[in-house]
Image (cartoon, rainbow, N blue to C red; front, side):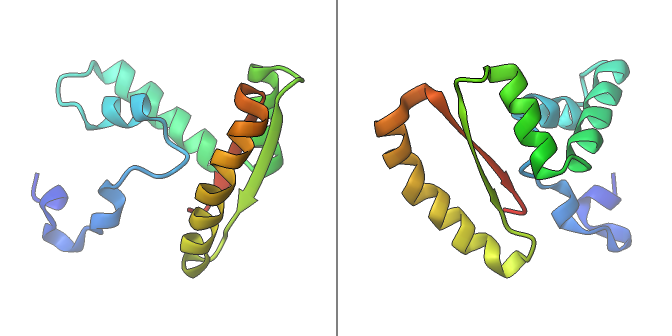
Length: 111
């Protein structure tokens, strides 16, 4: 509609997938063909994950991945710090992957 095309002062940033939404959730929200129930479920999941604190996210990941996984949390609350945090993740990830493989995971917030 008009709002998603930039009319009525709708913020275009609201149409970009946030970091805490999965690709599956975002595609169900964006799809005009997805059943309403699927889109509603995805919307609730995205809101719940948005409200999740980094420790809660780490706990959720640890529960789903098992206690053998090392969870690395990198949090950037300021938008201007997001680029630095993203660069740090990109620098650490390959080295951590080389040393630990699937035994490690990242939790990022504010990127």
